[in-house]
Length: 73
Image (cartoon, rainbow, N blue to C red; front, side, top):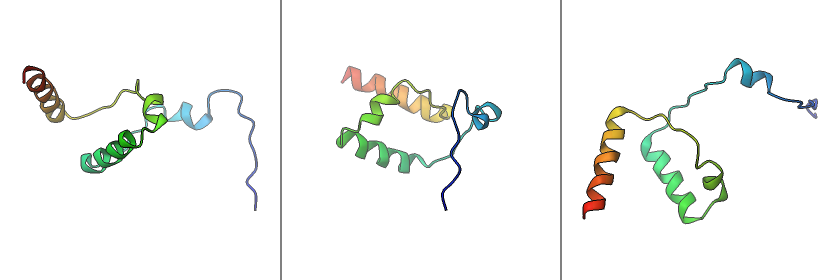
């Protein structure tokens, strides 16, 4: 059975009610997906390049420290 089609004329009703949806994913799983996307040169990586990502303070500190160590090496 076909679903009824809706005419989209602006902001989706669902988006206006829940504008800040969050999903939890294991870092290991996310890294595997992103690694494959980089190797495969997927265009959606560029499409989403300006997206903001919320991460834990611990992970942020590790990433910043690693970034600084790599520059000096």
